[in-house]
Length: 231
Image 1 (cartoon, rainbow, N blue to C red):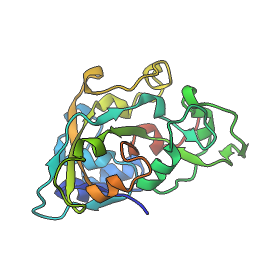
Image 2 (image 1 turned 180 degrees about the horizontal axis):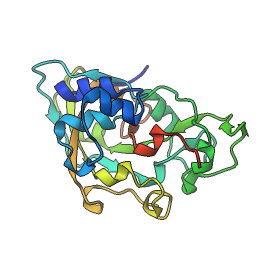
Image 3 (image 1 turned 30 degrees about the vertical axis):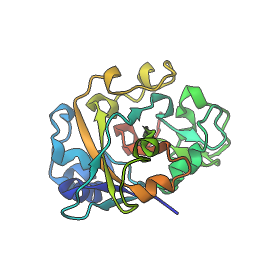
Image 4 (image 1 turned 180 degrees about the vertical axis):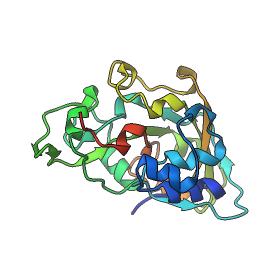
């Protein structure tokens, strides 16, 4: 069983165009100069979703229930996290696989582990031989199920969620901020937010998730993933 992240209209179209392509090819495909990340508008949100994420288009004329203050950016889970990593949250791997398919490790990915979860990863010809669980910017959607437990909605209802985002997250993968120097969840009040992007989750996918109150989704792509880990 898997869950999907639903996107609306042009965000879904852009995500489909950009999916699985490297940076330059994505720029050409969408006809945009994306070097000025701070100038991105809502149309370009789909550019940032991870290529192995299970996505679908939100049905037309959907009326969604908005849930606020549930999206947390967890910098301890940015960069490659492998299957035997210490200190992982409960059912982390199961949650990641529920929302996204397996992706093979890039060349040298094991050398760029987040220091909070780092361990000696087996490799052959500089390609890890252990399972890569996540490698983008993982977002935790916290306590959604509890917030909805007394709400009279059907299992087919859609939940609207806004995710805070800062453009520099796409580029600064080597910043101390993202490599385990802080060991706490960071919400919208802790970062310089450039914009929020909107996703939709189906209620049935939420309640059937491995841990309905802790949805870990390897959601956001950052620029260094376009070129592999080469240095």
